[in-house]
Structures are given as structure tokens and as C-alpha cells.
Length: 402
Image 1 (tube, one colour):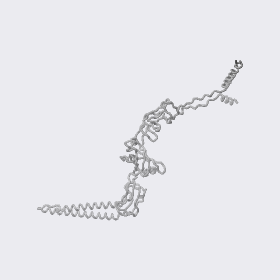
Image 2 (cartoon, rainbow, N blue to C red):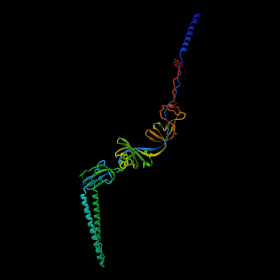
Image 3 (spheres, rainbow, N blue to C red):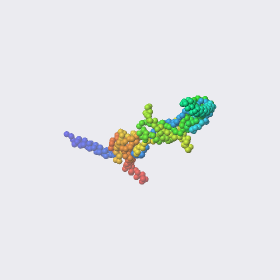
Image 4 (spheres, rainbow, N blue to C red):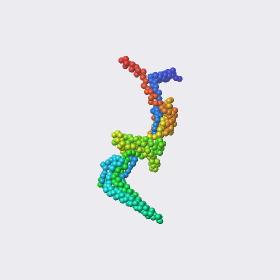
């Protein structure tokens, strides 16, 4: 049978252990409470801005002259004169003399033609007199009927024909003499010259090539879908051309004057022709107009003025998914709005309706977007300051007392 000591001792040990455990627990500081974390997703927003817009269509092309003419010799002879302006790159006015061919033979031909015409005129006068004499003689004969040959009508007709032939020969001789002087048919830039002083040319020989300077043209390719943004298929639309001149960017104004009327079988493009007046600034009244020359062969980009789009908004294309756009409503929740896209412009799209003016467009990406989820913007996040503990407050007070 257990003694009283054997019963009390274990109980005392257990009691001491429990008391020690309680004492140790009392010495342990309770864990600090962590501040509550706001896990609402942050997004960036941008206000939708509707503005009036006029569509424009982009294209490109190379500047060329409206007229390009090859000068061909119409007579034969030696080149006796060349104008100082008749060089590659020279500018000439309409009617300027470019070259002269030896006119000696053609002056002689002209004298022969004049002499032949004078002789035919004299023969015609004489034949008319003979016809009158024959008519009077037959009037004295009462018992016969005169024939056309008796009245010398065939002879008269022959002399009339000879005179007309002589007149034609004279005109031909005059034209050939005039053709010995090569003149510019219009205001032009000399593209090439194929002859030299003393050269011998024959009929059909190439003398040179010229480019008109009153108007320039640019052939602008357009995809078929782009034509819907132009009024009247672009006819008479204004065009702004941009390119480089002497290392600096320049702008020129032009107008669409016509369409080629066919779709290119290889590129499937429709070509519009833009016209620029006075590309070299030769008719410009100021020096700046003259310096802003649009040289032939220049590569230019073009902006063709299109139709009126009305009030529209431009947004980045990647923000439109399945025809919908993400917005932030007044309750700071995610809402998807279907939009009507009327045009794509590079990395942007143009929308006409589906979202009201001033609405908040979400421009940042969302990991797991769900319609109606709560969102926040950086301005709504208030920075939380670290709380001041009691010990730090005491230390601060003591430092002030000292």
C-alpha cells in the first residue's frame, strides 16, 4: 500500500511543472498584428476623347514630268548652232532655239518652189486667156456644138492642178526650212542631248529629250479597301507630299486629277495620279518658293485627304478584344463595352460608337479579368505609415527632455 509521501510527491512535481509552464508563457510577448493588405488589382486608365476627324489615306510614289518628249530631226544636215541652255539639266522656255541645222539646201529648195509656183501661175493666166479665145471662136460657128476639149477646159484644169501642186511644194519647202531650227515645244528641263556641234543628223535622228516643268505627276498606289475612305474615289482630293531636299524635310501640295481606271494585275493596286503645279518653282514669286523645288525622280510619301469621319475616338488596337473594350465604371468595377470599329490605322483603331465620351479606358493588362470585379487606380492607394510603438515614443520623449 502506497504511502502518503509516494502520493503527494508526484502531484507536487506536476504542479511545479504546470506553474513553470504558465510562468514561461507569461514572459512570452504576443505576436504583433500584421496590417491588412489591400489586394485590389491596380490598373491604368485613360479618358476616351471624341473629336472630329477627316480621314486620310497614305501612299507613296516617284515624281515624274507630266510630259516627256524626244526631239527628233525632221530634216537632214549639219548642226551649226547649239544653245548654251541645251545641256542636261538646263531650263528652257517655250519657243527657245535649242539647235540649228545647216539651212543651205532648204533655202535653195524654197527658191525652186517659189519659181515653180510663179511659172505655174503664169501658165494658168495664159491658159485662161486661150480658153476665152476658144469660146469666142465657137460663138461665131452656128452649125456646131463645141466639146470640152475645143473650149480647152481640160488644159485649164491641168494648169490649175499644177498651180496647186506648186503651192504645196512651196509650203513643204517653207516647213523644211523652218525645221532646220529646233525649238522647245514648251517650258522644259533638258533630260539629255544626243548631238554636238558639227554633228550630222538625218531624218529620224534623236536630238535630245526634254521634260515639261509646268506640272509634275506622282503615281500613287492604293489598296481597294482604302478607296472607301475617299470622296468621289479620290478625284480632286488634296494631296500633301513629303520628302527630303538637300538633307531637310520638305512638303509640297498637289491634287488628284485622275485614276488609271484599272487594277494592276500583279500588285492588285489601284493607281491615282497626283498633279503638282510648278514643281521646280520657276514661276514662284519669292526665293523660298524657288528653293522648295520638287525634283523629278524624288521618292515621296503622300497623304490624300479623305472623307469626314464625324466625331470619333482613336484607341490602341491591342485594347480591343473580340470587338469589346475594357472600361472602369463609376463604382470602380470592370465593364466590357462592345465598340463599332470603322477603321484601322496602324497600331490604332478608330471607333465611332459603343462607349461614351470621357469614359475611363483601361490601358494596362489584367491577369485574370472578370466582368464586375473591383479595380483600383494608383491615385486611390494611400501610403500606409509605419505605426509608432510605445517604446519608441518613450525614447523620443526622453531625448526631448535632455
